[in-house]
Image 1 (cartoon, rainbow, N blue to C red):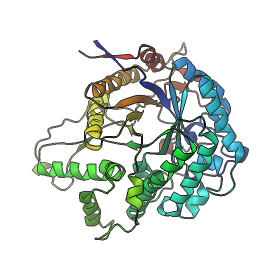
Image 2: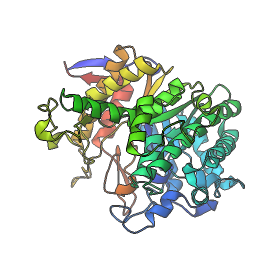
Image 3: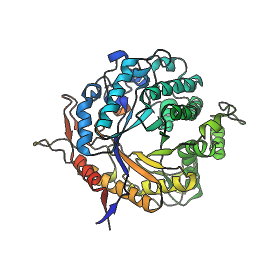
Image 4: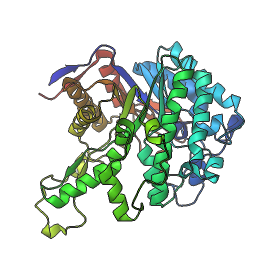
Amino acid sequence: MSTRVFPDGFLWGVATSAFQIEGAPEEDGRGESIWDRLAATPGRIADGSDGRVACDHYHRWPEDLELLTRLGVGAYRFSVAWPRVLPGGRGALNVRGLDFYDRLVDALLERSILPMVTLYHWDLPQPLQDRGGWGARDTAHAFVDYADAVSRRLGDRVRHWITHNEPWCIATLGHEQGEHAPGHRDPAEALRAAHHVLLSHGWAVPVLRRNSQAAEVGIVLNLVPPEPASPSPADREATRRFDGSFNRWYLDPIFRGAYPEDAIQDRVRAGHLAPGPLPFVEAGDLAAIAGPIDFLGVNYYNRAVLRSEVVPEAENAPRAVPLPPASELTDMGWEVHPRGLRALLLRVHREYRPPRIFVTENGAAYADGPDAAGHVADARRVEYLRGHLAACAGALADGVPLAGYFYWSLLDNFEWAHGYTKRFGLVWVDYATLARTPKASFSSYRDVISRNAVEDEP
């Protein structure tokens, strides 16, 4: 193998989110979130679990910060729980909730670890949902008030702000497919929700800059590079449709100030939109969404190979992209495909030109647990990391302005609708005792960070 060296100042980190690790849903004045409500609904979480304890990070955060120190990361991406700060979504501020994040930020800086704060990682306060949630334009205004409150308190120390994590998941999984909170199945509401999330981002950016001088502000998108399963026109058309709804529906308004026209027409043909102007877009909205940002966060887990659902398999062209064997799938059923990350980063750089890019999430779910001696030999995750970090190094060689990489996740945690059945962590969490055990991948990533280099295949 050859060695790929990363540039000086490349930011190494890990990522978590509040609902997935914190627990303590009723402590110190925290209010109910839409995920508390969904998890309490029978049949919505695979293992019947909820986030009431999760990893108990709310109480065990000093232990978790020691893990960060041992790992040697330069940055930690975490999210603030909106209902912990504003239990009603708006109105009275819960100072005790903000105190928790204040302590966390100070402790990170004492360890020379940069805090990268995500303001919204899916835990909308339930009172806002009761008034329409992201389907209502007023929630975008409420988000700006929330961003203002948090950045007023933390903005003197936090220099990296993310407005939203994965708007596609918020809109599509939450409002169209019903898998995520609030669990709706309404395509028209999903389109409104997507717009209001993006609009709240655009409105919040200048507020964050005002309250946090010299800060860098961005947004995180989960992006999936699509490939047609064959050279047939039908498969190429399926690929265009997927790209329009999954990737370009979010990239285009942020960087070009417009929704992609072909994707709009796809929605019209599907009956999700009426012909004519988009009913949820008001004057000035797209200009606000397209306001300058300092970086784009890219979450990458897998590519999509698209086969037309219109043309019967027997009439379509022979498959040109083979399906991956089961050995190359994670426990989520996602293909391990590092080359897709390099191609995705290069495409985003060439077509949209964000000033800087961070890989803000990348990781794999594998169930490997402790052996008799207490060691977790997660060899597949070690190889997953090596391959994807080599892809990042390749993207840098291609000229991509990649500034950092954050592995998902530090800890095994509550994996949304999957409950505790999927383990992404570099650290094994025994959910009965909450004991933390660093895995082999923890040591492997620590070595990459200390060397600022990764081994690549020749």
